[in-house]
Amino acid sequence: MISTVKSTKLVEIFFYVSDAYEKELKFSCERFSNNRCPAFSDQEIMTVYLFCISQEQRNRIKHIYDFADQYLRSWFPKLPSYAAFNNRNNRLSEAFRLLMASLLQTHQPLDCSAQESLLDSLPVITCSGGKESEKGAMV
Image 1 (cartoon, rainbow, N blue to C red):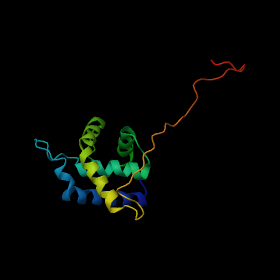
Image 2 (cartoon, helix red, strand yellow; image 1 turned 90 degrees about the vertical axis):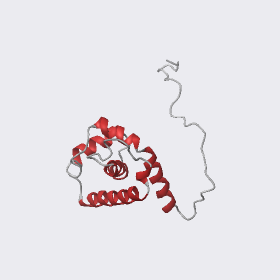
Image 3 (cartoon, rainbow, N blue to C red; image 1 turned 120 degrees about the horizontal axis):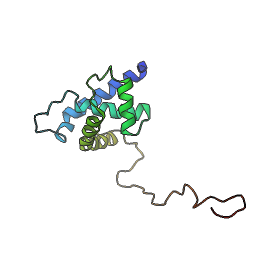
């Protein structure tokens, strides 16, 4: 069970994704097979993914699926198995790319330039090469 505030956010995300899907995204992930109308829609997969990332700070597909299975099952009763969810999510990569491009374009800050970007190529050093023993020698 999720809070009322998060329930409202889930519905907002679903309507936003559904609208974008009908206008543009469906053409990037159209199926030409017998399973072109699955029980668990592409809009639902995208909604679960975006909700879990934005509201629950879950970054791994397994964590997203586990959260959806445990807390969102009443919202999405036809949630498929983890393997099917993962496979379908991967096949929607182009739809996610188009959705993110649209979001970035419509929500771009005024002081942000689309012609300039910054790339940091310096490595991040997280630890030293080895541990020192009590006598100061490398182990």
